[in-house]
Length: 231
Image 1: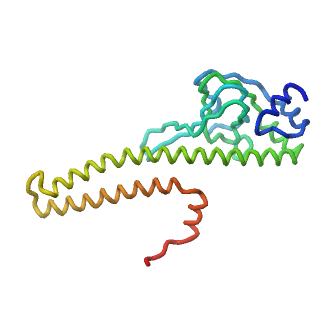
Image 2: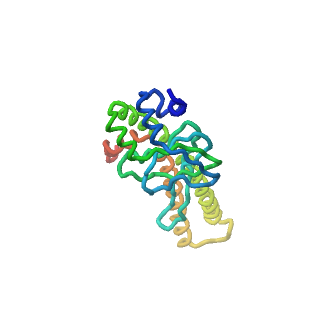
Image 3: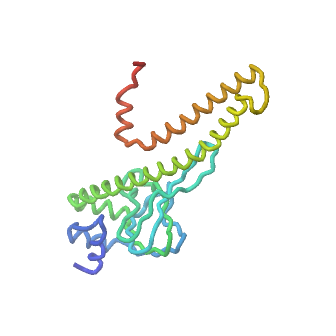
């Protein structure tokens, strides 16, 4: 085994693959260096390479927008480092990166062109199948991590939304109790309806957070089992 293939053997994605497969990858990859803060690949761009991290640290980020008019921001869905891989989209149609890779420090990677990956899978189908199974397994783990990050993000948003709602509810209750002066029957009805709407909104925020915590299989179960029309 050559020094190059010994290095590749250290990657979880490639460990245990046949020597000829590792030799092929060693011949086709290109070593690249990136500076702190530099973008390695961008969400939505053509996925031309699979990247293997030799050193450094990379933040995987996705665009997040709350509503059609909200400001587009990049949210971190994961941080990876040495002996980990990124850029699975180079193996899967439509071959577009689903996230951006941003260096958190100086980073060295091995870049494997997508054409070489496809040739490898066609020439070594058994190893290619093994490789795709590993990709699926690692992707599943990262999806779980991204879902946890999303839930955490929603919990923060939920808390920040509930605070002003609670404040307004308190003001309404103070007014309804007469501490701010007398009110007419019409004003009381309007305030009571407003209080109900605020309570509904607070419940909706809680429901959204509960939905975000659900596992995919639970969501599918909801779709397969219609809600009962009363009890």
